[in-house]
Length: 123
Image 1 (cartoon, rainbow, N blue to C red):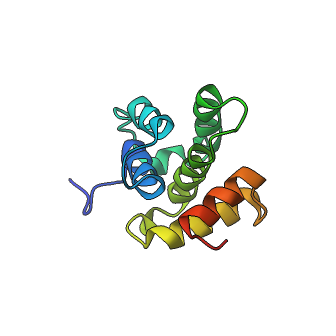
Image 2 (image 1 turned 60 degrees about the vertical axis):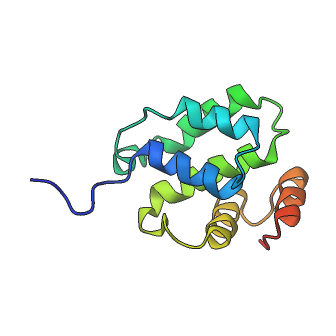
């Protein structure tokens, strides 16, 4: 019996995070993140206990020095939305603000704070 609506997949969460963090599609790191998860069709609800580690491992491979703030924030958005799947379609700025608060306890690293300032998101 199909569920209404269908469960959100990890691939969809990553796509939404990349869409929020890079609406123009210009960031190569985020494009690579999207490629790595394009076939991740498992329901996000099944990954709640492992999503943080899975994202940290993948982002760590792409950005071992944590120098790509958009990538760090996209990871935070995926983790946040995995726990709050009902907010996937909420306002992008609200999602960014809440994800950063949750991931960095309201105190993001300087490069992430600068990136948030550049995109006009108050955290």
